[in-house]
Image (cartoon, rainbow, N blue to C red; front, side, top):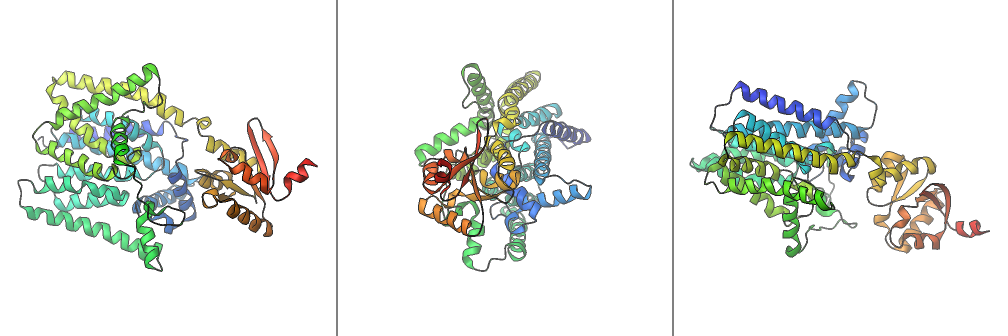
Length: 482
């Protein structure tokens, strides 16, 4: 392995600045549910919801970053701040990956190009533009792998970096077998102790502090719900493992192993073929690298296997859980490319990166920057001008966070009122309290909802092209007909 040098620091800094510029040059308007929910909690300083049981650190980091912006006079929404934070995290992750490749013996230019290839992958690039928890964990996972693969790894430091990844998202606990393997192979097994002890302490102390000072559970059930996090999102807050039958899970996981590189799904003709080819090529190179009987190959294979064990069983169709797989796949791919002459390796990385950049820019990034491609955002902006400020507004899906955040109206989440009798009872309760309720025409497209509301009382109050807004109250239809 090569000794680290100033040139490595220069390459790492160059990668960070270039990728950060790329990430900040365009803003995603996709606005995923969790990102908007986190922005709401940041603006409210709602630490009970910021310290999510499955990803403890991101909300707190986002809150601190938001406060820093406001010290310098920023007065806008926190969602932009969180998006910039993720752009920084994504750029930092690619910079660390560049340094990691140098520690694996890649040349400076090859390490920089490998990091560039990572930066333009569908999953890495898109989620570096969105407010979400996953880039924080990916950065620390890269730091843990970088330290573990050094010539003289510091086991305690690996544990600290791995703890940062787990605090970013608890799913990163699945990197433990790979990190244990590389730390103990050909060494005294006692080397595992400083790694595991620092990992345990660095994870447990933040959780204890969050529980004592932010969540403050008054019962074991409240503690259980906090720690379960996404596994307790049912309407009655019971435990639910988000799985699908293995016959569907494995194809979904395999398909996502391609889609992390390029989003070819729903493309047609040449675009579909180009997307598939661009996704297959690095996987072929990674397979060639995995065939090496080396410490690095075994490490990255264990890395992939550990995460696969969890994410085949838990939401194999969700791309964000596969972001950290890209670290292993591109590390293996650069190993596989060693079979080519030096100039051919560089040429292959340049060609793939340029093609993937163009493909993902055209089919993923630019469409996500167009507000017309986010009908929930259009609906929320319409609600802001067509429903009075004091109104309650029926909401489903992302509308549950979009309506309060973008429209400034109070949402009535239909997820909790699927039965007609329960919905009518809630509407009566609000009416008795003197509250007014509105619903957009798009919300009424939910199966069976329009009929339920027509039986209660529904009348149009505003329209602009395809956009409509309705008032919900008993007897409105009869009055409207008269």
